[in-house]
Length: 443
Image 1 (cartoon, one colour):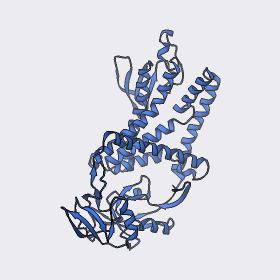
Image 2 (image 1 turned 135 degrees about the horizontal axis):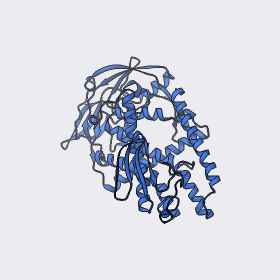
Image 3 (image 1 turned 60 degrees about the horizontal axis):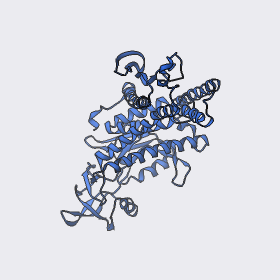
């Protein structure tokens, strides 16, 4: 899939990637408001992709104008009687006969469902994308069977073949994929090991590499590795002139550097060996037993070796469940990170703004269409969560007003609504400015 999107670089391409991602996420969000509002009997007058002057428009048979506007930084649905694109109450006189078709005149259940639908559709988008990856890529087989053999540096001896069933490494039994890491911990760090495999029904011993070599499987956006231009598939063969054979050596050497620049010798398939200078970044990382700890990181993850696991197909419900679980994890991670910042467990620099999101989006796109699509799913889940925060001007704030109305039996007064909405607007603008300041001044 990496050929579907060109290698993004520079400000223009970063902005282009950001605009595309934002357009997809916001359009899905607003379509959730629109379609559930329509089903609930609320009439949409305008569905706009973008803001500002209209570039293209078409009116459908229901009277809704579908338009593309000149400023592609979001979008909106304007319902009948709305004062503005934010659906901020009834700002225009509406014939009493059509009041039921306005957002303010609709029953409470219809208003609640319509507002809730935006974030829910963001979650649905994330679930479908993650499930799509599960459907197309499959899941590793239960037995440790090798799939595609990945390219390796010339000095690496690798006699493994696609289809091999791994039985043991240096005499240590391997029965499932979880054994690979456990066995690697027992092995001495060496460039070569004895692999016992079943091939064509016969068990044989072949020479193979370390089971967890320093081969990069993923690069985190806005990390030191991303800034330096490292990619998935690269193999780190040395750090500061010290050769390495196992991925676990990398975090130890990064930690020992304590933030000092590292010189990595990297082998790239089709390109050979080159050197990259990286400046590790200190980050707050969740601990397994709760809480956070600071670590020096370069932003790379390791894979399963110089091979991809053989995979099995994923059923419909299993794939959807995997998509739900992945989306749930992003929401819980966002909630945990926000609480950790509020309680002072982690630094405020963890809150990024528009610049950091745009840079991350551009770097994800530079890794190929698959990574770009995955990042859109991550952003969609995060934006859906943020929109549910109980802050007036966000969907969550409106939902809190509706809950108040359901409990008390009447909506908040106009004076209270205006006051809380002003506070909410100030809070949102403050967070935006704070995030932008972090983008510019945080390391």
